[in-house]
View (cartoon, rainbow, N blue to C red):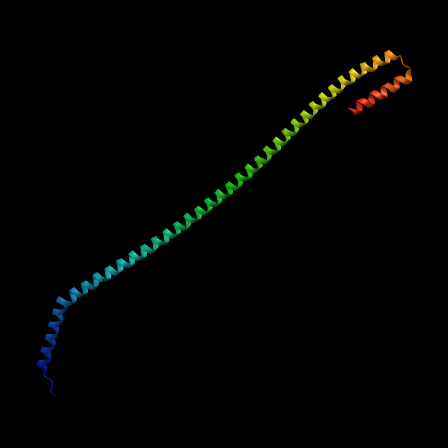
Length: 160
């Protein structure tokens, strides 16, 4: 097999022309499409990253809002507990005051009834004393008889 320089030169020239045509009409548009595709992928990656960061930020905000809601709920529960405790204390104090008032009223009523009974007893004793005095005067009794009458009267009074 003999080497032919002319066919080699033709092959090299044909290769260079083919390379230039491919570079101008095939590689240029192909590389342009590939560059556009690379830019699209970069944009999508940037969009995905910003979406991820935004989602993380929203998650942090939601956690903070949830924590705030828990704090508010705890404060409401604590406030309700304090309020109910105060109301219970007020009810107990009101009941104690009412019981004390009723007791005082009852004591006043008892004292009043006692005074009425003493007054009635005094008037009755006064009447009986008058009767005894009249009997003593009628009988003109001696000291011993008078003592017996007083003892009898005291027995009658204590019996009533």
